[in-house]
Image (tube, rainbow, N blue to C red):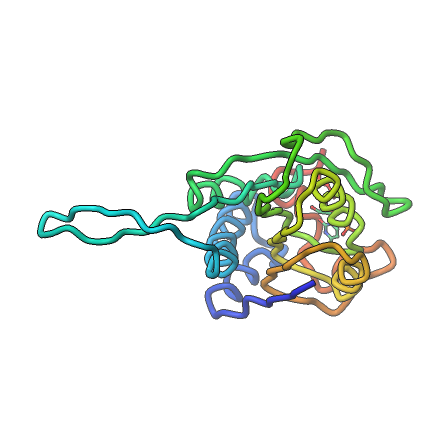
Length: 207
Ligand code: PRP
Ligand code: URA
């Protein structure tokens, strides 16, 4: 597992807005979308490109496009807030969906939907979930992807806890993780500290 912390002044500023309890749902969604741009930008830095001949108004030249746009997989609910931005930056990508809700008594993820291609052999996959806490949700989601043959998975999250990072490392899954921060740890409710609270509720309200 390869971990990259996207520690940039603009990322810190967006994350600060997300952490602040005074930030309302709309401003939280806006800050998460802006942070997602930075995470996608960093995570796509080394994607292979294919050359294509183009003609500018002045002359012929060589242009570039992504050789194989990744499959984007937001983890519902909270990952939905990253999906449009990631798709806007990767317009040729297809999108799959995984629905998970963490049981707040056991902290185990409970799956309620998966809409994924049956084969992910030779496909790069980008998983979107703002929160990596215990790591249970991402281990479950990425397990669904490797069961379908994925061998290269990139996880984009706003915030991670050291416990979740360790869990992903120990899982042996073929992962790269990009996050804007690795926080101090988890509290007794398995919330990230200092964290930002419940990323789904902060975007969409408590249901
Ligand atoms: C949050 C978050 C992750 C998960 C992280 O989702 O978006 O998916 O918790 O926790 P973990 O690392 O301990 O598994 P939640 O289950 O609260 O569902 P929601 O997105 O519908 O709010
Ligand atoms: N899920 C969240 O939304 N926030 C946390 O801090 C932990 C899990």
